[in-house]
Image (cartoon, rainbow, N blue to C red; front, side):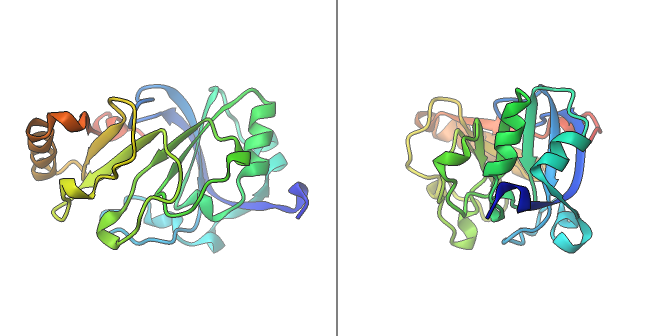
Length: 200
């Protein structure tokens, strides 16, 4: 299919700061695509599940019409790897943008997409295995989370986050305790800075 014919279901776009992970605190523009292959009970973006409610736009339309003041662009969802992101990433790169993606990791990510940063949030409790490369991993520490589910793939130090579930104190305590119990795993506590600051 020609790049010009590929459309993406853009459910929303906004400029804020990256609230999680290695890039926390950086100014960023978020492009949220609709549709997801999972239904996590603690998902905070359920409104992105239905692509029929999104505006279907080409890569060219997105870069022409969406205001993107920051260099850092985050493509998120839903699950953005349901779509061929290659044309969109190429158009963003033409504008000098640094392109990050947030994925649940259940789909392969072709190298030819040339994404600059991949944040994967595996969902091992659902029986899913990590199917893509990743620059950082975020595991949501819910009641079912076990340290044994962390992938054995080599990651640079400080790039495996135990993410607090929805700000729950019990989740934060569990994540903290695991970090203390397993120092050899080089884990980090993950928070959602944007929610603490009450911003988008």
